Length: 236
Image (cartoon, rainbow, N blue to C red; front, top):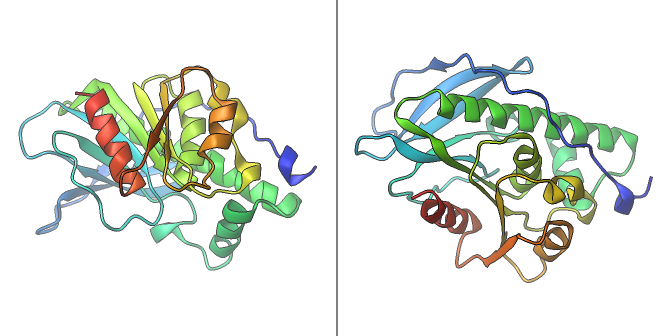
């Protein structure tokens, strides 16, 4: 199979309620941390909430390598590291995964790695949705999804599998051309908004695969900040 013909089936495993262990707060840390298990993996998640009382609209975010989080007035954020990235990095597989995400798979082993990465990531994100839906201080019916880079790729699959979000804002950046999630982008689901961060990123390719109602936006500065601003308006 050529790289250009690479295709992945949508991940549609049923979401189960998350069994969450909330961790003690850390002095000066705006994030509340928790742990859950997803497909046998231990996932460390984080929740950041506005200081005023809820229930708040909220966003599940997949933004690999983000260290400086933009302010999100009035909006709660749920996030976790994606498989093999951040605190879940693997000495054996992380470098190979990053190469596949940037350049596409070079063979069957790479394709299997990408498939497992996406399946695990979507399962993890659906567990984050379950965490949010289960909290009384978060508005059950007012949430969305934001994904950048590899997070946009798995976010397209999440949108196809998860019926709850009002909107999904994806900024694919310069992911490999072979990773365009055609089936997921064409699927019905939450409002789809694609954010272009650079003139030569993958937004035009992804938009050509999406339905007629896709919205295109240009990132003013940071793609994640733009995505969260869009979602803040959509969920207000």
